[in-house]
Image 1 (tube, one colour):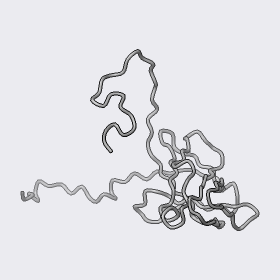
Image 2 (cartoon, rainbow, N blue to C red; image 1 turned 30 degrees about the horizontal axis):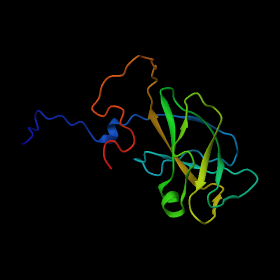
Image 3 (spheres, one colour; image 1 turned 90 degrees about the vertical axis):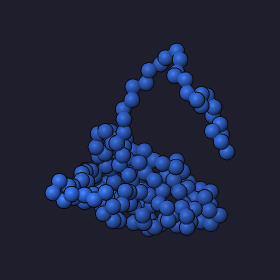
Image 4 (cartoon, rainbow, N blue to C red; image 1 turned 45 degrees about the horizontal axis):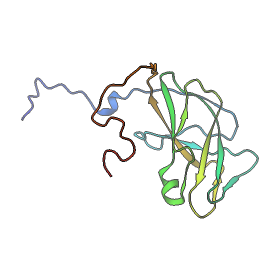
Length: 166
């Protein structure tokens, strides 16, 4: 199918449609680094370790550590801040989040800390200022839960783990 240039509108590039969001933050520590998007199209903003009075923190094999960022964020209402592991830390060193995905509620105003876990068999050293996680802001629904006598029928029903295949 050929488009007629006289009737076809130019809607521009994808970048023309991006809505810029602002997020207020406070540095709770003078050494804190603000969240940083590595590229224009990065979904996640890097979060950095902000260690107080030390330059590094060792996480032994199988150990968990709460690493501060030195930041407090004001997540916009109607959004949640979702903290994900950095893929390079996970794939190269076995460092991930102990809670898989962290959630920062829009009404939380305290310091953002990252719960890291070392899944490898070697110790890992977190350095002050190192990128340790990534923050993605996503819209969230605010559901109202209603207790009822019966749920609607589905093909799956109450089949749980593994019920839809291997």
